[in-house]
Image 1 (tube, rainbow, N blue to C red):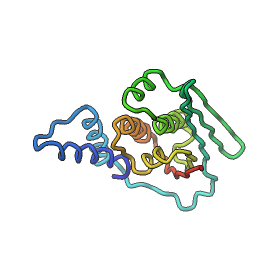
Image 2: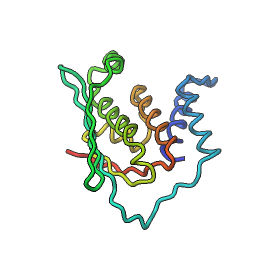
Image 3: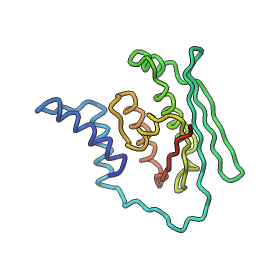
Image 4: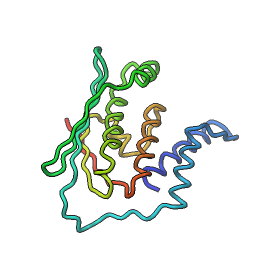
Length: 177
């Protein structure tokens, strides 16, 4: 099931711990749909062992300052480079700010999601190395889940992008200190 199936199992464990009668919220239903899709149509993961191409390098970063919250990223494929930078939407900042006093991990995770959305065509059927400078966002990407609802919602969106890809990109994660 991998990381995508882990999201669904996380939702069910939470539901079972809280009650004997389980009713699923929208997030749990979406997680179940991911799991069912994976079980019904999922193919075994192919890991090419003789791929001589260099991996794609992706650097993402988020900043959370009193002046604003911004994200950016750089994609490097051989001698081809692309980048993005933008402010985090106010709706997300307000939502995260109402629940957390510090939410830099969510900003960093949002940068990873935006990078994956922007560069999805490059990442299909390619190896990639993500360079991330935040422990909590890297941990969420490795585990594929989080106990924090806002982080979990971003992971669901990232899972949906990966699921729609022709061949999900096997990404490797590296922490930058």
